[in-house]
Length: 460
Image (cartoon, one colour):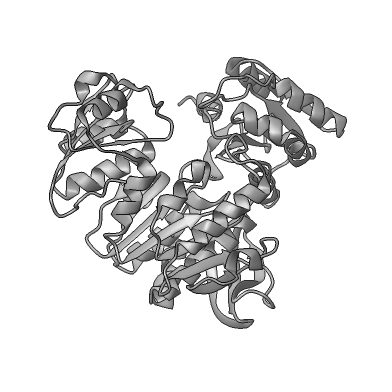
């Protein structure tokens, strides 16, 4: 694999530069004095921002975008190998690096490089820990997979020795990373278009843990099944966080929720009360995300005062139980949940939120995930007062396996759930306007564009 000299500015080209992760890497390299070009299929707020920083952006991916003075081409996993830019780079002998390989090389330039991994909660925990690091004036470089209000985007270029990033397991991307602090929040079946099964996923997370050096630290949820599989024989320090104080170094005690489902608790370290934590985000799952953030912060030497202030200052990221507004006294929440475990966590949060009936508009994400986890999706949704299903959001896939939202509808009904299906957003919106009552709670849920339903109802 080609290794870039980060002390010698070069000409870099990013194929797919408009993506939320690729744009972050491009911004880091622009800040280091590198020449950056890139291509994407359409103009966006992200590409406009990069252009103001000096990047040259093409809105067609053609061979002509790659010239002999291009030193390295970086591309995402979504880019096909017959992409004309990749083919031209090979023809000219220009080195190619995947996004994950390139990020791994960037991490080597930061003595404290934090990788936040897990099937769920990566964006929230990365943002939560970032907020603490900002509160402590550590001047971190931040790469997050969502829009974080505190940095007004998905990227912050700092000037210290600290970097924090999400570490996604899909296509084993995170195995190219170089973390000095690794976090594993949870391990569940997902991305089964790539992984063979849960054992295959667990194997990848074990390999990720093995990447952490001897003077580094693994922070891991002790509630994960067969925890020892991930921790046994590691050279690095291991810190456990979880619900049981008897098997977790960090655990919560005296958990309480306010009228908006925002949690507070006493932090227990090795079973003994340390300090009180108050969160400005909803749900039990965020209590455990905060435990991982606290453990990482204390490992870095951040004070309790800054940890407490940072957690209270963190108000969430876009599309994570995000209050969008009210229409006809119906509260509209938007949530990114697209896996059964995430749906369960979101609905558990909703129980603490003031409302009468709950309406969930769920848009399944990818055909393979819907097919592989169909019974689990139905089980997660069966007890909701009213479930409205939109068509599956295809993302990177084509429907070659004959699955549809009607299949999920039938599974929910088999479990005596109350579910409906409509093929268009406009039909869903009309149904909601006719049936929701004042005091009800409407949640638009999924990783696709289902957020548009709530925004349209609100007149946005």
